[in-house]
Length: 362
Image 1 (cartoon, helix red, strand yellow):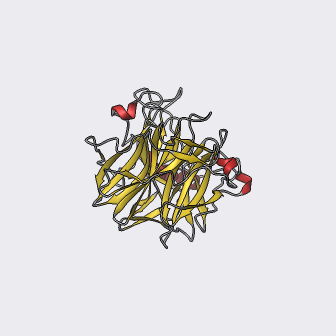
Image 2: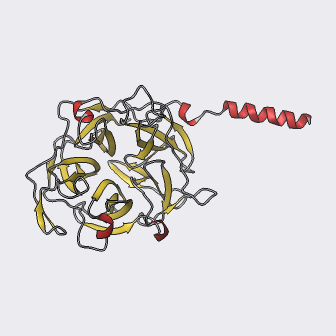
Image 3: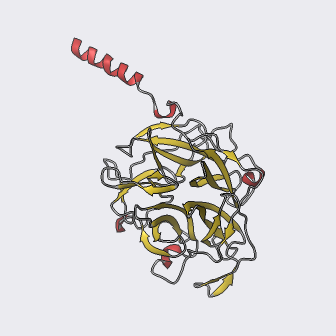
């Protein structure tokens, strides 16, 4: 009995000494982002751009309504931005396609022409039409091949799909990221774990596998041997295991969703994520419906293990172009590029335009 009491007291003491994830100091985060107010938004809708849609068999103003939620890659000492654009046609508030714009300074972008990625008369039409292709994230493989995760929306279900490219202009589609038994799983926002190699974000294996955070209510985890087919991590009941969840009373009270590719650092795996404040358990000090962003740290040897998490949002909407738009009060972070000694963080504003903020690379 004495031994039992001693063990119990020791266990309680040990737990009390452990730091809870959301109370850990934030020296592992990327901080001090400054919005480039003099130029933002850096990309806006263009009502003059025409594209002959192979499904509609007609020309559409493919980026006339909104541009937002971009992925970014540093290539040839330039920033390549693959961005989501919507037209004004159809029954799902416009069809989404992906355009490409290039910048030599990270601030001024030139569009390259028609969309580089779009629903077509191919084997993936049933998944991508008519809502379109949305919200890309892009990482490199060791050999320089680019892999993109993106959301396909058929009007009813959002599904996470995969494509690859050698030049960010011509893409090969692979279809669903997950096995057939997850074909109808509502899934979005695939953030692949990568390492920083000079100015490149290169997918990095841990324990012999690539890893990806995904989801848009809770954040889940999946592994892959080839960056194409992914196996979700399950819990003891055979359900998707949540590795990061929303928190009542916080800025992320209603949902959490991965942002840019997850980044390996000395302290662990850094995941920038988007969160929404909404519903009866929202934070009353933040306007309802606000999307802002937090950061989370996961274990380098066990990517499912949450080590730390910011208690407050480090990035929130406070500019007019972030507060009013297709969806009000939204900053949605997706593109992170190490460029010319700075982090360039690209994000959708109110689901309508694209802006940038910068922070020194430490």
